[in-house]
Structure formats: C-alpha cells, structure tokens
Length: 368
Figure 1 (tube, helix red, strand yellow):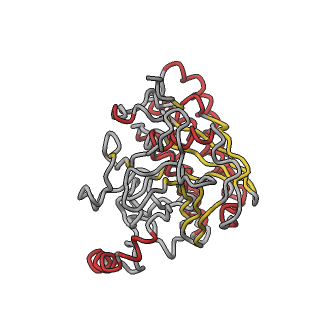
Figure 2: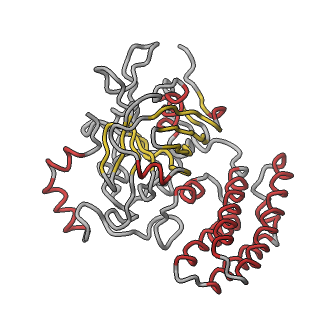
C-alpha cells in the first residue's frame, strides 16, 4: 500500500532521532519554522498565497502589493492593530498610483484587462481604508480577500509562456502547462483545488488527466490520520495505481520537486538524497490541504493515481522545513472547502471530480 512513509517511520526511528538532535527539532520528527521560504519572515500557510508566490513572474511592485494586502489578515489576528492595517493599505495605494511599473510586465494584448483590474484594485483599497476608520473587521477581511483574488488574476496575466522544457523522457506522460482548477464532490461536501503545472507539470498533468477520465469518481478515502493526512486514489481490484488502457502498463509518475531559485524541477530523487537539505520547494507542505502524490516508500518514481491531502496542524507540524518537503511532490492546494476536508474520514467517498478551469493547459502525449 501507498502509506506515504508510515512504515519508513517505524523502521527508521534511529534516523529521526539523529535528525532531531542535529536539527534541534522540538516536536518529534519535524524541524522548527524556517525563514527560508519566500517572502522572508513567517512561513506562508495559506494555499492561495503559496500559489501566488509560485507563479513564474518577476515584478517587484506587484509582489509588494500582494504582500501588503496579505499582511492585513496577520494584523487582524494580532489584537486588531488598526494602524498597521492602515499602513499596509497606504503602501498598496502608493504602488497602485504608479500603474506603469506593474503593467510593464503584462503582455500588450492583455493590458486593457490589466488596467481594468488596477482600477478595481485602487477603488477597493480606498474602500478598505474607510472600513478601517470604523474598525469593521468582517468587511476588511472580505475586501482583502476579494482584492487578492484580483491580484492573482493580474499576476497570472504576466505569465507569457511556460517557463521550462520538461525532460523528453517524460513526453509519454500528460503534462499541465499552466494551472487548472478541480471541483470535487464528496459525501461530506465540496472541495476546490488549484493545481500548479508551472511547478509540477507532470504530477499535475497526471492528476488532471485522471480526473478527466473519471478515475476518481466513486473512490473511497482509504487512509485518514487526524492532523496528518487524508489519502485516496486506490482503485477497486488488485491494482494499486492507474493502468493505461492503451499500453496496458502501470503509469508511473516521477518524483518532481521545483526548488526556490531553480529554473526547472528536480526529477527522480528526493532533495535529501540530492544533498539539498536546506533547500525549500516552491510548493511546500505548509498549508492545510496541500495536495501531494503518494508513492511506495522505496520507489521515488513509483507514484501513479494515489494522492493525499496534508492536514497541516501548526502546533504539531510547524510550517517550514519538515520531513515531507522534498520527499513527496506537492502539486496544488485546497482553495475552498477547508471545513469539509476537516470532516472527511476513511470510508467517505469522492462522488465526482471535474476540471472547471484550465483544461486547455493539459497537454496529452502524442501518439507514437
């Protein structure tokens, strides 16, 4: 069974203890929070924010705009620091007063839409400043979330082409050359996930292809561990993965991890095995609902159809470097349905999964 690294834990307690001593781990098996993630400071734990930072763009003003708006929720949790929130909004307003610095990264044919988004952002920031004056926390948080959704669209419009070439040896596998959104109906309610092909094109492409085939419809969640993982994707019968109906072979998916600062993913080897102990994946296990590929514990390239949601619990598994980052491939994040995911247990079912956006980014292998 694909039990992630359950048996690895049982058979490698000595290794974990040594890691604990070496890295100064305070919670068994996990390292303390790291400042290595982008941006510097507290580790990011919101899936939507992680997806924004994972976009292959290079425009500092829009990143500063994003950061200032994201900081608002932090300030709201910190005893409602209204002056700090107002400072964030003033920073955002100053950036929006110089639209050309942001528009410079948007392809010409997309600029009219980008200009409209900028106008909407400016109006929204002004409205939030008024909401701060009356200290309307609910209105501020809702407005902040709406503005960040627009920032996401603006940043996505800056991506003009796929940023790297996937190795030819994986040309026989589906690839997601961009992003896709999947809606999943379960027996407990609905989930929405955004899959990031910019960081994990082969892993995300495989998942989108299987969703399109209806592979996951009706499958049970086969493993549930509170504050850890919820896993599914094991088909009925003797098979433990997807058997391609054309080749009659098990479709094996390579381990695929894009590291911050790298131009393309690392394939077929864990970051630990590569000696990259301090490197951070662009898509880390630091958010509730991180979506990752399961695999046999001893086969880094043995993933197929089974996947898991990481049930991030900050007190048990602090954000930052941990023993899953670099060992398993994250390929997306839950963006809606957190309360539903929290309720799902072993034996619950996926009723249906549907690609609702981005299917045009799925590239199927050409027939031989």
